[in-house]
Length: 162
Image (tube, rainbow, N blue to C red; front, side, top):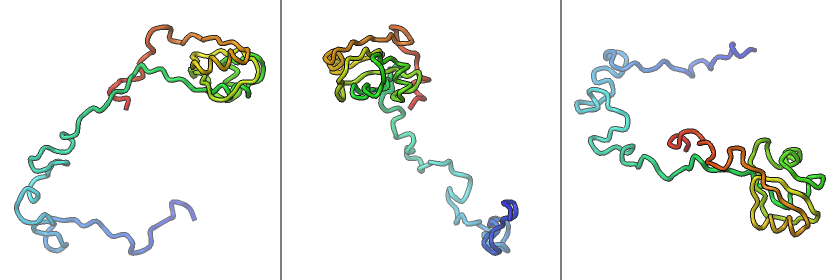
């Protein structure tokens, strides 16, 4: 049996009721619309509430604010740096270890403990991470952001980015 040979069981599907085609086929005369009134005449717009201000107009249009210039960092804890081999932990080493994706902005956070001195390169460091790395005898290097010191490029239209 093939997909194009499949059919619904006999009698399970019935033809659509065609109202307003005379009294022979059920749904003649008023065609299921009742008698008189707005609903019996022309079509009513979807969401129409009889002259009351519709729900879609009562609800405020825009709520909150989404900053299109927000800089999002991929977080890496200090404790995760022990998984990286070698004494230098740079962006390529973090990607190779599977801690961040390629091209992500990296921020080192202070979670966990560091037992060996390492030289860490990242885009940003928390104060606790900085203290943990230097306390273990390592050093930090802040990598400049790819878009410079100004604002990052906007992520699409601020009104449609919801």
